[in-house]
Length: 194
Image 1 (spheres, one colour):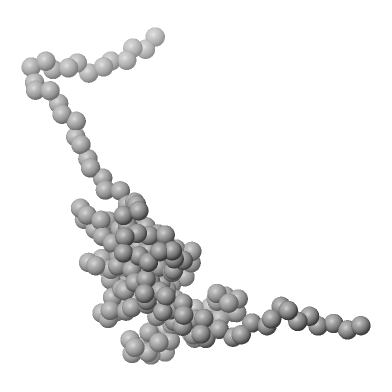
Image 2 (cartoon, rainbow, N blue to C red):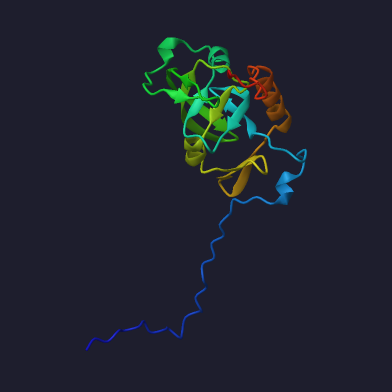
């Protein structure tokens, strides 16, 4: 038969106090929607500091696994083909077309005081966005994004940091995309013969 021995309480010492640890919780509420134009279905577009430059029109896309850099940002950062490393996989664009990347490049991306190294895939495709940051960036930063609240939140020391969204920039990007879309064929006409 085994007997469990429990520690004996010292009655001469002061009572022990429980250590309280306060943890910040990343959450969103209706208050986070203040300042947005309702109703909306806008993309989450933020400004980030990439390679030392403030870059507007960066889409934060939690649905994507690939960080993308478009030609306009590639040129503005004065990057050269020799700066790229090989990237052998093809990608499928949002319009269903296969895109062959030019290569990949690792760049520092700064949000507030946090700097994360991001492997961008450089593609030759037209986009109204300068870049897309995706799940790898969000996970490395420890961030949570909400397209409903148009915000990205992450812990920075003892406080919660929020990335400023630009709803007006998101709408400008959407309009630019719509204006450059090819005209779809009408479904009213049906080919056939009798």
